[in-house]
Image (tube, rainbow, N blue to C red):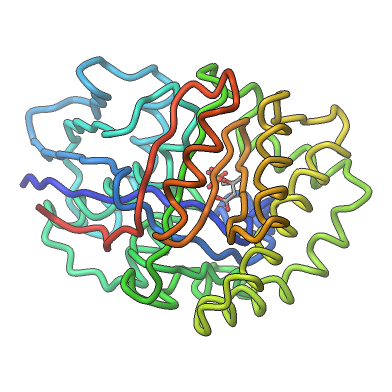
Length: 324
Ligand code: DP6
């Protein structure tokens, strides 16, 4: 009863921030992401009747107890679906630097969902896998699929209509992403905690919810029509709204550093000068620049000219999560 799976990280173009239910991890808004080919998690799982608890190894080290417990709770869901009660040995590694401030929970829980279900011979559909992965981490629901992916917020209290779906295959549009690492420190307030604070305290929260369906609609249209200018507009708008929510929370959540802001201005400046490129930023200080293949070198050259950018990771659009 063992299996190995790979799932790619993803970056949201229309952001998820806020939940309608914490127990089932149901998002308050839909989101749209692109899968990242060069960034992935590989996870091996072995269910074994001789184990007396779940074990989690990240890289080559035993994970912190809170991470092990989070994974163990997730495996309880898989155990209850399968009716097989064995504990598991989970070995997982990210091919991207940990501590680079890139979220690994999306690719992590997607790879774990696929590997665990394969090990227990559970034949779940993509939709069912996505519903399962969502309960590990909201963004993980999107990492089940490659290409361009939409997460539906759904309306059902049981979360049965809250899953991700592929909008378009990876080859729909040859978009590239350059991830500028501006700091290698761990983020101060994680997404789950940050969302709770924003829901309770940001005066902008209701407007964030109210304006999200239009962002989803516009982003879907931009992807299907390959309209770069529309995609730039909606992605930057969604990103800045999310950060406005975070910044207007009490206590204020400021995920940016000075280099983040420099990169925002650099990218907007390039676009003003006719280079089709836009930025997006998650709950951390790294800046992701998105452009078509022809502009990658130009954009990279400009980014690395900013002193203090520690590293740039280049990635194309990724594939579905899969057993290997
Ligand atoms: C800013 O998926 O990490 O990256 O569901 O609580 O695990 P939980 O949150 P998580 O949040 C991701 C937030 C984001 C935006 C996004 O990916 O949509």
